[in-house]
Length: 285
Image (tube, rainbow, N blue to C red; front, side):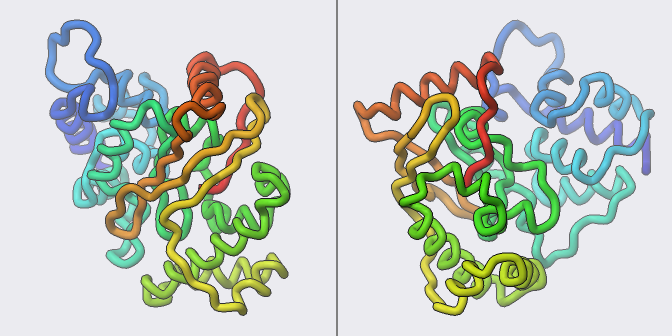
């Protein structure tokens, strides 16, 4: 780990960002350019004191996961993210299969969507970033590891996860998950990450094995989703992929105008801000 260079790099990247660049309101006069340290720490989900130590060239080396969170918070592109990883003493990912770093354009669009649940997911249904309202509706989905990072894997292996949708919607959801995954595997040229996920699913789920053998394929672009939320009940929303980039997609959930879901999303926004009530479980993207 290069403590000095890491500190300089973090400070320089923070200095070139403005609140509007990351979806934050510009409150109060700023004596120095760029984001405040506590704002970056909040976006990255880390302690401001620890970020201060890193910027000052001291403190323990951050984990690769924390470096990735900092890269997202600072809106780094891939070259900058890889440089940050190396400064922190971690190898950069190989060129193949690097879709875990959120596309900068998609992240900018995500920042602009404050009144609708929205997230960025990979083509393997791994949630890479989500806004506050998506967190309130769907639960935190970005901190998992291994095959469990994929919502498709969760759908076929975790009954509690499936309980987030009404039972009568399960068959259609399973069919959509498998068709979308088959399209992603083909588009990736059967790379190791994609084939490993399929292998793990076939080993874990008889239902997945049966549906995979049917060879259905369909990229998921839109759908109607009915989500069972423990605090507000059934929420019916349109699910649309509004933008794509580098094997990633921006997914937005929107209510029909004048529907009950409009008020329920408003309530979830309040619940999310005030952090009370029953925590929302993770859901499929």
